Length: 421
Image 1 (cartoon, rainbow, N blue to C red):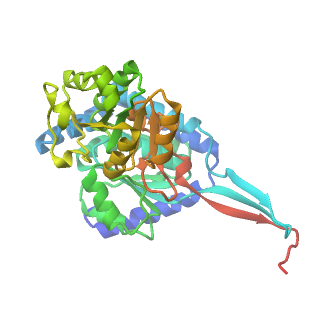
Image 2: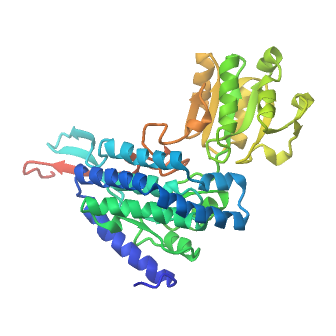
Image 3: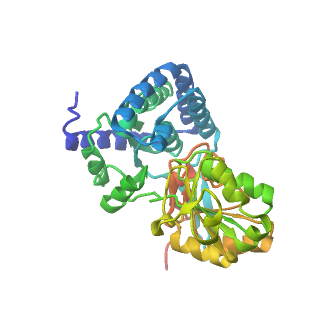
């Protein structure tokens, strides 16, 4: 058995096996991928207690490390979350196979017929922290897109990820696909992260899922292309023409549903005219829900608010904390978001089509929403079944990265004895 303390040898071995598996998956039909994912979903459900027991070990480890409540929430599994994982696998399995899609085709005057056809990327490396469900989501999406994947989960989710990975491997075996198609790094050694970032021979794309520290490290050190977002500094802007009831529902949900996810609202911008008409109701709702509201100026007159520090605007709290500010119309809101946003997700609350169109047109974040919670910034909610992450770059993939975004393309050119003059 390979010594998993010899990191270079481990990377070479896993990379070689992943590349071989990727060659098989590239020509695997939809039926076998479907069978593997359905079998894995069944295994996750039938092995629920094993997964929960493994998760208990991880939670004890997290407690000993003193992880924050938000990180513990990301790590925690229960029956509902395990069912959601299994359902996510089934949803991905039921999607149209993204490989082999004809993206475009045309004829040229020379007589050639040209098609642009979707193909797998090859081998994907996923480096993530505390969320064990990423093991299932990433494995499923990579498989559906015909890619092999090397998963490096966080040390705090080691046992949970291992239990989930066992279910994925079982599904591959049931479908007679190479179990090396979905590999989990079998060590907590952080040196494996650096090894993956430099493995240009073995890995085609790296996807980091985690906090600013992890993503920043990956983006600065990777020699392999990266799909990622650094921070989820998501804004909600309540326009003068916002419907009060809709605004109250959306703001509260955007901040409090789950505070530790990248789609959680971190800054609330309120138009002065909305505030003049309705008063501090949005702020009071947040305060009643136990959210610490950090603000400036007029909003500090609202009992319970606290002064914002200069760096609270443009900060990802991932906690029951939000920055808030009054702005003079949509122009000032857009200017604020351009200055402080991270290009992830922004929402406008308005009944004005013209104002919403301006917000959508003039901002360039990966996801823009109208009258909807930023917590919908999720591949599963976009109908992708799951996501491997959110990408805020502008090359190849952007926004939720699902199976279709994990493909590239090639050109198929057909002639009839055609020669170039």
